[in-house]
Image 1 (cartoon, helix red, strand yellow):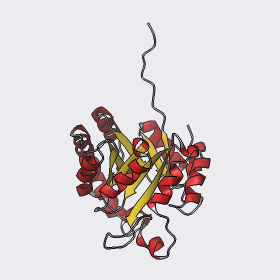
Image 2 (cartoon, helix red, strand yellow; image 1 turned 90 degrees about the horizontal axis):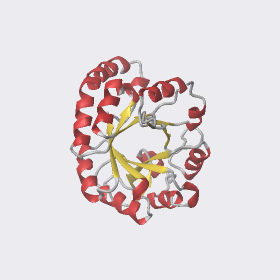
Image 3 (tube, helix red, strand yellow; image 1 turned 90 degrees about the vertical axis):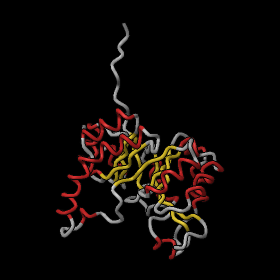
Image 4 (cartoon, one colour; image 1 turned 60 degrees about the vertical axis):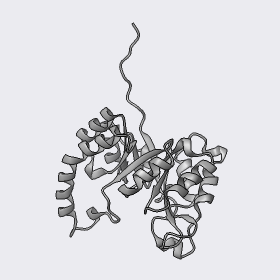
Length: 244
């Protein structure tokens, strides 16, 4: 009788904004640095050019780079990923705000990238809009909804960890329910909220779990052992140094 023991799935190695610690993020140079490091997926951010939601869609995490004239357009980014060198590499289009969901879906289809794209967002209202506009595109809910890392400051670290403990209790049920209901396909989760219970709940629901943003080789190895789907890092070179 053949061996039918399930084999662990390979970890998806994901570059944050490309490879933000190698070259400035959300740029073609950063994307190419991530490709050279052997990533399986590239995450990048999308905002409308103007704060009122109008204008071109730009690759930027915030309005600083856009207002400095340093951001490239979504069209330029997608044309880059449509090149042969990127065949087989997935993309995670992270929408920083709501209101331009259909434009992102249309752009992915226009460049032939819908089949290897995932759209993620912290904006829960956007999830239903994306699902209706692009049912064939994988959809990820990013949690928690924060703009700055509260763990980076000694003034916010302790209350943030207390809130994280509460979130770790309720998140597995919420995320698994959203996956089973077809509202999302994946959870994009800050590493502080990840637990074995969350991994199991999402796997049992048939979803994927992507963890952000991990720039420590030991933590990468720990999360890989837990069985997460993928890890997002600013330095994809770390995947080659993570201890077994």
